[in-house]
Length: 343
Image 1 (spheres, rainbow, N blue to C red):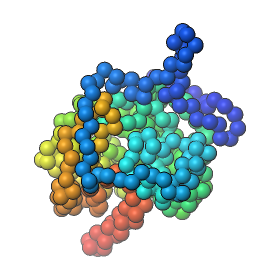
Image 2 (image 1 turned 90 degrees about the vertical axis):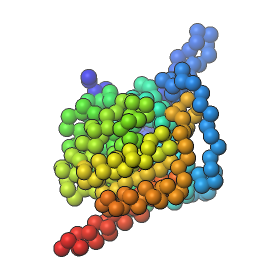
Image 3 (image 1 turned 120 degrees about the vertical axis):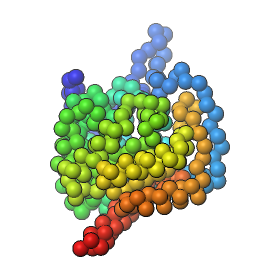
């Protein structure tokens, strides 16, 4: 498989992004044909989306800070997973000028049944994107930033080199900012993980998403034990690196399966676990099996803490990047306390 050339249509330092969802042909009568956001789900049966319980209701975004953050993302032609994945916490996070940047385009090569990110032919790589991400981090004055991406199975390195360039650009533009990367699984991409870890992020995150039994339904392009090995290898490559993973509940998993995932992650020496409620993006996506109650989340948090994670975040609205800056500070404190206890 050859790597597409790193070209970018347009001119100037900040060219307008190309959205593969609106690259289109014509229907023969002059009308523009817009490809669907999720073409692979078009034949799926419609599944009614149940009404959210009170504990999952959030206010619609609209603060001045939210709009200012949105304008900056548009001005710098950057994508955010906050928007693409329809995150329920976007109003809260953007009010604090915390946006999770999504690099490598906005179209994914995978077709996970839970995800709202568009699937299709990926965008061309933008060689200026790492610098624009760094500009946004500096402009927002972030103390901590999360950088994630779509899956790019079409690239020889899965986009690892782009991650490394982005980390280095942020280090130059905002040397005091700590950096968290939430990467794809780099399935069958030799030396991809090594390239990302060598760039020295502060946190390496990769989400298992669900229990092994549901992978064929929920994450068909991925392999559970490949993702687990990725996290294990990251810690072995750099023992000082914080590692992090997250899962969703409410997809049809059993409690015992969630507890086994916790054990698997601890066997890979993962430091931080997040657990949140799955929310169905559209009627064509994987159905919600049930809404997990806040008490059940508190129970999961208690189990995870007892298994030895440095930090656990488990609640209906928990997402990988939610409160990431505050959580990073807590991670460092927890590690220091544990090291002191063993001294």
